[in-house]
Image: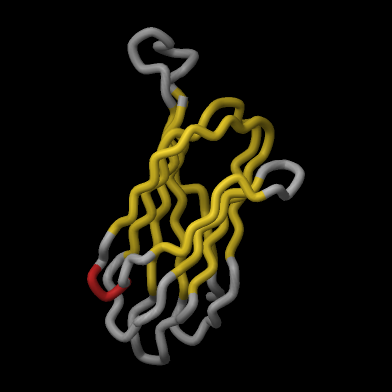
Length: 134
């Protein structure tokens, strides 16, 4: 298996309950496999029309990883709308939270670029990114 990313879930409550829960939530899971290389992984989220209000990036615990990962969100035209070198130390399983107000429409790409990967015999590294918006 190679390094991979997937949109794990997407919940859009804006049409169902616009006055009670005018929000949406997208969860992405990225897996960096042992000796899989430290290359960028991109996952698209299509047909989004709204505003990103928060991003939470967390890394699962994985012994032997000392690096960080860069998190980037691009729009339809490959313009960077958000970028951050996430300071979470993977071995500690920390989360980084960012508040923002970024209007988006169409397809966005959520990208993770790790600075390190697990070595042979170690567990794969899982990174979870949660976007919330209205």
